[in-house]
Image (cartoon, rainbow, N blue to C red; front, side, top):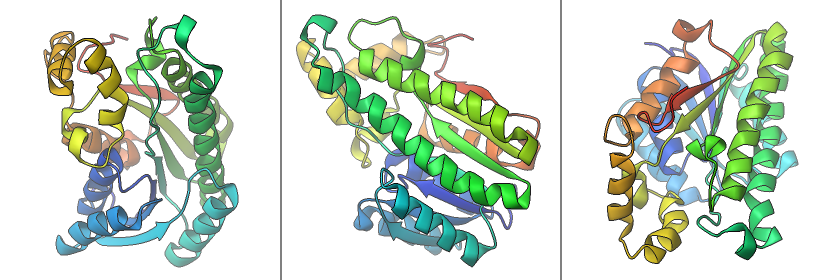
Length: 265
């Protein structure tokens, strides 16, 4: 198995992407530590993993609380003998589709402040323990908004670009300690709409302004990609497994583009 005997901390594990990655990590042999704000969602993911023969433990915490994240990382490292993999997959409900003239400062700032804060906190907590082992993988998540010229995505654009920039910088800072940092950039995932994701809340206002249902709007987005479809949760989770594994040992400081060709690097 690709992740046999690895310990993985996943923040936002009760959400669509976090849960999918947690299940995939566990199938590949990792012992997964699921963290998030909603205990019931964490318990549901953990129950699926255990039913399939995997190992999962849960902790209810806020990934914006630095002290709570540090305490959790310390507890995981003590219990598992270290931290091998860390993924921040928390969802941030934010405003999209509002032009600059109508966008409030608060709505602009919120995703930037939240995404940069939580990724800093979780990366710092995990890196401290990875450095002691001389190895580890930190995975982050962004969106195609990082490269979009607008209109209407300003907060998301800057937040996603900041996460990608942070990932590159951390790769440079932590590489000498054996720690790889890779950002995963999926497009919208239709499956996530009903799986504890913030996707529906984010896209609903834009769909309503266009006189469309969210599913119709995503179908239009799929038509704008080179592959004429959007990524699946399994594809995102499978990519995360590969990037966390030794098979990707030479990959760091980059963005895995899972936009189905919406963006071309």
